Image 1 (cartoon, rainbow, N blue to C red):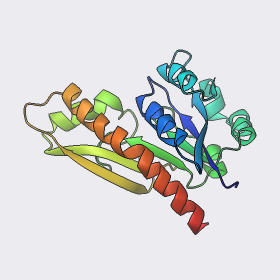
Image 2 (cartoon, one colour):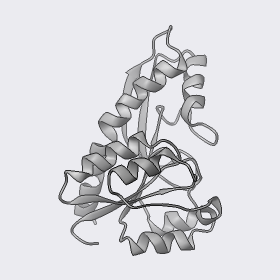
Image 3 (tube, rainbow, N blue to C red):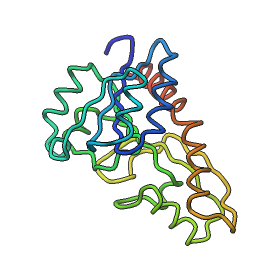
Image 4 (cartoon, one colour):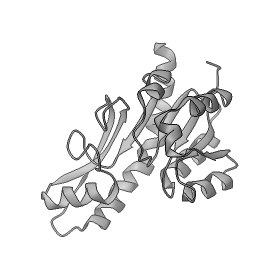
Length: 196
């Protein structure tokens, strides 16, 4: 690995977290965003990548299931770590073994609660509110072969008040995502280097 660590951001949606990460690392010397990768043709993240002058590319779902072309692309970009920022496809075992302990995801709840297949975005916030939880938050974790079950590296909490609706909770959780995700990535990447 070179002295500058290179990140690939995977995103399926509008890309607000991806944008925060791109801006954060534009100011850093030792970590940079090499590319943005999406599975959706019209994902908002493509425009955000373009504005941040970060190369972006779309791969169809089949290339995530059988990721040899994707892995080739990541190697061509000298990617060291993969960051999932609102990426909804399951990560294949081949990609996990190509990047062991180097794929980081963010989840909009306090895992192990409210994780697993189909638990993303508003589905998570609705479930938290339906179950009258007193708190929610974010979990940043490594990716393994099961949805939302990789080793947790960071959590931050926020209060859930009884009168809150899912959109209000989503906004509160998103604030935590934007506040913490770039810094936690930076800390993890820097520690990983020292350990390896």
